[in-house]
Amino acid sequence: MTPALAGARLRSTIRDAAAAATDSTEFREVVLDAIRARVPYDGVCLATIDPAVLIPTALTTRGYETPRVYATALELEYGPDPEPSRFGSLVGRAVPIRTLREVTGDHVTSSRHYADLLAPSGLHDEVRMLFRGRDGACWGACTMARRPGSEFADEELDTLGAVLVDIGEGLRTTLFRSSAHVPVPGPDGPAVAIVGPDDEFESVTASALEYFERLGWGPRGNPETGAPAVSAALWLRRSGADATVLRARTLDGEWLVIRVGRFDSEHPPRRVLMTVERAQLPEIVTLVAAAHGLTRRESEVLALLLAGKTRHEIARSLGISPYTVQDHLKAVFAKTGVNSRATLVAKLAQTEYVPRLGTPVGADGFFEQPQQPAPVN
Image 1 (cartoon, rainbow, N blue to C red):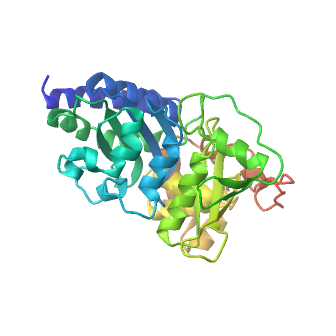
Image 2 (cartoon, rainbow, N blue to C red):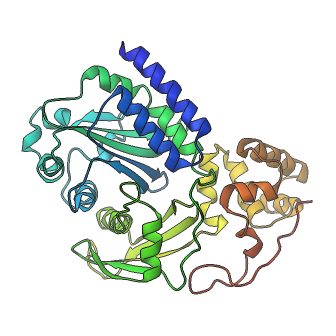
Image 3 (tube, rainbow, N blue to C red):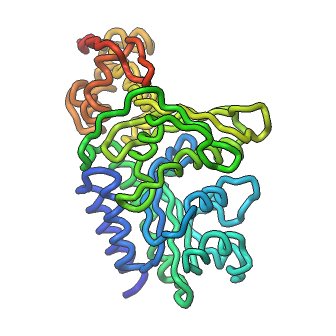
């Protein structure tokens, strides 16, 4: 089969999966099955990415069973010593895909990436790729590896390169779908963690640990609880920033906000502090807008709509007529596949958030008292 035909068939499978998948987790599993049928692999990691900060938010893995493999992979990606094979090196490429053989000039075994990550898992050749949607934003990343004696062929890379945008679109469009997992009540108490200089939890509350576990990083049914926190801590150290905010979704469909900041005055910080809380709608509006392809003005209207503003209040805030607001609302509803604010809220971020906007927040980061929003006139 030619690469063009293989790519076309794989593209069709991925597009069907994007249309039918219940949520992003299911889509990632179907994508990995579809790829393996065309381009076999022995180990794979597929992550979704928050396009605003380019930090992984969910991770599906197969074939990596050695201890600390996730910590090693994260340190190689975000640690202080630059690795030529990092995903960041793919950002500027027209087709963001590359093998470790290309990076090392066919001297794979001389690389730290091979010695620390691939060899301990019995793997040798590796290909990395980024998934940008048609909007140009990066929605995911993937690394695939094989055991010695079976390198990725150029034809296989062409097949993968032909579907990168389709996978990116699928990750984008499945981001806010209902979860196939049974909802789990959120934990009680403050969710706080400190990641120490050894990239281990120096301190972590039970609530934070439960949130990280519910993100489901790693093999199915065996989550790597510390990996999301270590990823965020390593990113903060390398970036030079004082703080950042990451939005992530649990397996059962609850949106979280992870606030990450330095815990000491050193540069980069040796100890990183983070808090985890249930997301309020305004905190994920930009993600909602990007995922659904909204324009800048439609995004502004959406933010005010989800904050409980009426059509006339939105018009006054933006300096436009109520009729123009109504036109923007129709566009927002059409792009998100709903016909009212109530169904939009239910679709995007669970119905209990908006009724509580503007009320006090408790110790666990959620609202204490309900409050009904004003209807859109």
